[in-house]
Image (cartoon, rainbow, N blue to C red; front, side):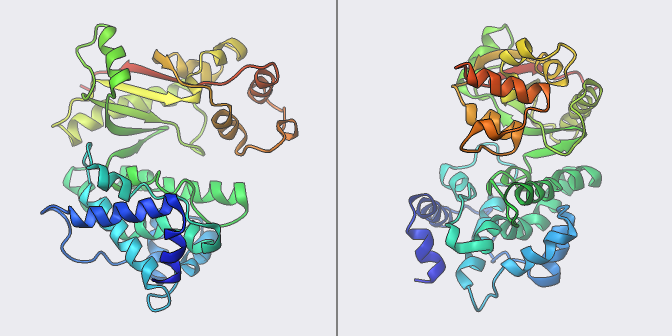
Length: 345
């Protein structure tokens, strides 16, 4: 067994992921690529990184983080197999459990260094040509494809700002993009999804003719995309209402939903009514609040969770509200809300 595989097998999370890759290979259907998907190296990898919107200062370190095929064949094989799992699940709203686990890439052990931190990038670069082909087949405009995959570059930037090193965290998030499920449409991202049991039941209880298992759009709010102002959000929803019936007419996305810390009702009690956050959450009808999760809210607002919250800045109304609520013994819980998608005609 190679050193790379030994390290991955030694940890439960990465060992389970390796088992999932093995299961995906064993249960591959007729649509599975028959040949190996090559992992780009050198100039080809650098080109893919530019397509992903990675800054020039990070391209060299990422390219250098991929060992040569002869030096570490296991990493190349794993990246290729992960790319194959992504391609097998391309566009599938209901991937098999094994396939889903195969591209839910966990963090690699720290001792794998930049190779481990960048592993998912190598797999995504290998899958990128197949995503482009899928987008073209559904008539997705080139500008939407470019904006969508540029989310990888944003996350590489977040990693460097947060940790001072090159890498990608979380590794598995971009699998939604590379499987043809998520699209950037202006200020917001919209993911082709389905209503889960609790959410679908709440939507149906509100009198809508939709319920668990029905197609829906999951709304995501990316960083570094400008203010979350109502005009930009209105434009994004309008684009989504026109985009999905045209590009994916076999699915009816009449409902959009958002599961986020931004939908905690307590935010409306501590922020001005004119704040973009409050106006954003009021777009949605709250289905339910999630379990207490102070850590997620702190991470989204401040970028990291220090051992001592008192060390965090208190420069904005939002920062002070988040910290004061926790200091007073309260908890941030987030929420799940839904809204009808406007008519795109």
